[in-house]
Image 1 (cartoon, rainbow, N blue to C red):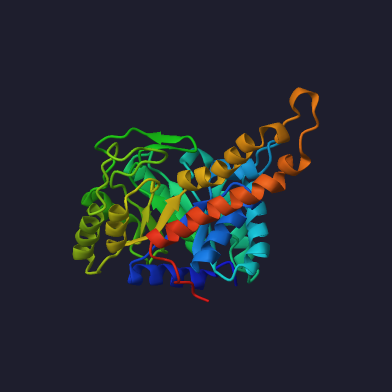
Image 2 (cartoon, rainbow, N blue to C red):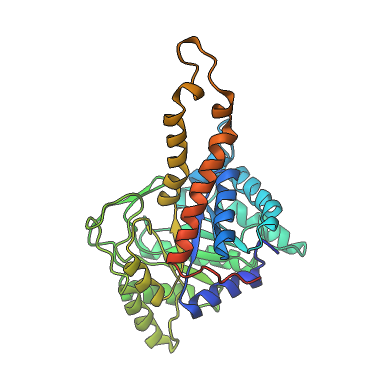
Length: 340
């Protein structure tokens, strides 16, 4: 199956943790960016994760009604058809979903997968993210318990963000300050509320100074070594080595050493959006500047259909983004690790 079954997705995550590598989780907003992500994974001979944010799903749903569920379902169904041609395995995931969008996004998608599983099918998505970082930790974990139970029943893995990640992601924003670091106490409370797998598997987006978006080196102080403290602090209490499967948010612009340290401490998934957006758009900008008088009908001329045909610049955009995905696979050590 090109789209991971629940069993294969669990195997993917287990292999990543044991091998100290992580899967790039690539945000997509169209069928073309989906193809770019799949191509990048295939060229790196790496399995991976394709994810759709609330904003991406709204965009995919069309500007006429901007329905997030329609957009997410449509792209997931499309992925189930086209991924078969790439020779790798991918999991489908929904990215950041805050409290005010749960009823219009994650909960309906969970219901769709629950119906599929009841019919003997696999879930439509393999994991969903609950972003409660804007809530108190108590409220965050209470909602997390509810969603984890529903996810587990539908053979889906839940991702939770328990403390803030700086910057802005689809309308959820946090200041860049000293609060961007998860404490051992936060991790202990998470383990107490959500368990360590017995209530359902979850991925943990802990904060170690992460910031979404674009930033220059030196503006953000990442402390990926903090993840080791969280693993050891919770592991000591529960007698379980490295109990968490961590997610690295705000990974664009991170140094190779920061990434390597995160991998050593249990990161199995790293989100990429900003860098891949630029990698997709940069070739388009280059094409437009180089072919200004062809893509536009300047001074009453007719332009050049070959240059304004969306396929001419779309192919360049796909190649640019695919290349960035292969680079991410190399940085995260997933190159050549595909299951099949």
